[in-house]
Image (cartoon, rainbow, N blue to C red; front, side):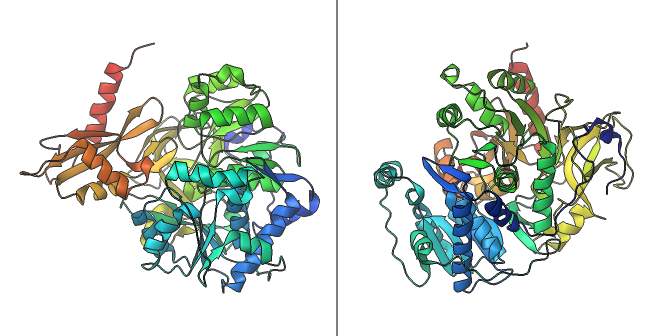
Length: 566
């Protein structure tokens, strides 16, 4: 139980400061919900619906099939899928088999995919048919033994399932045909043939790993964040307590946040399954489609990111749609502009509040109250069982006074076990159970927290975390690049966007278009610089370290000068 803290005075009577967590692994909650709400609709996907009983049976079939392939407790199973029934079934089925899920972004290039598969030691990957060429090209350099292939059409209702291959051909200029073999397996065959009688695996919720969720790092190489069953159960339970007006078995949750991102996984997928809610799955964000979906299917809960809400508010046909079903939204991944919050609440009947978290905390640690007092510009107050403090950045032992800026540290049952195969990084980030977030902020006299800057150089563009070093390493591999530094610059839509400052080698020439094409070959689209600034030299310290902060400060002052004053 967390000690009495100054922010607890703001808790409404409906939210306890400490919660009870069942001694169960994460997947047990799907089985419990399927027993309680057998015929209740669990998923809606492009016209196709699955009940909780169908969802649970499918997950059990998948678990059985994995065990038949030799997957044992602790083996890693990668899931490289957009939001779809397969993403939910694969996730819970892998956990039932005793495996550790490795969430993999479908946008990853071969380079990024190969690194993650090697580092995680994944034995099995579940991927879309259009991703088979990418997976096949890296498979031989990794520990991958089996590829399970599915397609969007696998869960489309008739006649969409017949039409979709033609749409796919037009969209991706490829006809997908995958042949089954001893190490290539078709999802449709698994669901048709596998039995639901899987072998139950003993799991210690506190110690056993459920998920490796990769996040970037200042070294440029993504780190696998080790999240246990308890970490994920605790954060879902905290979310449930925070949105205490949520009605079991009645809510409809809009799933546009990707489940391969820890925020979508917790705030949409896991919370829905814990509460018997119906999930509306959207494989990608399209403002027009989201507006139509809300108008037609009436979701009540809509977790999102600022860019999602901005995209909807700026859609030319916004006024044509009824969004009044939306009752509550928690915004994460990036700071929420006040004007976005106010405008979105005007077009819905709901509350939009800002929260805060990071991959290392499953992810949420703070949020404004959905049904109580909130402060614009604040990330709110810590969730139940979550402790937080602002540390002096010189000593890292002393707490600073209210109103003083320092590094935010958090502690609670949602905090990770550590980084996969990176003991030094773990030691530097976890201190006596406290997670050093790398974010600079302060707490006011009333216990509300604010983030003022990031200690790390991470860029948050459109809700995605982008680490400059990773982009810089790609730029440095280009034969014409002498020096490169990447920074986040202000962007009215994405919050920040990626800018590359580049010095070209003498005797070489390269255009912005050529450099952009090169980056697109080696980086996921959201990491590719949107702006290139070719310079004769870059600002440096006396020892030759490039002054990234000086470039960022230049951009900020330029942005302030160019932005119209209100």
